[in-house]
Image (cartoon, rainbow, N blue to C red):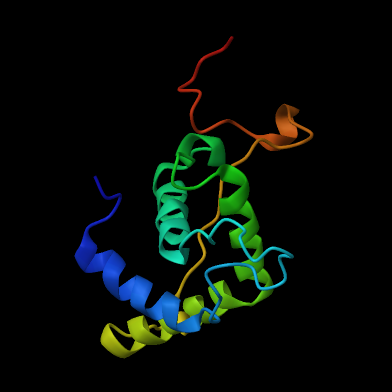
Length: 133
């Protein structure tokens, strides 16, 4: 079962695969030229989507098609090549063209945290509902 519907992953894969450099199926510098074939970039891409969707460790996604170390090493390779940065730029540009980004109108909300000093200086907690414990 796919992690995301194909109408979403196929265009994403098309954009992503266009950024990937051409790689031979076998490692060209292997002395016997008979090394295991390289795992398909599409398989690793789908595994990375599963990781993003489920938020689990690499070992939980790894199976007979692709090991956890292959997923990590390919991810690192793609980061070094700047492919994820390029894909982010493409996604933002596409969203801006279709929907429109208005980054100047984005507001950042505050957060409520405990005062480091506490005590009377901090005032009442808005969630204590008048408890005197």
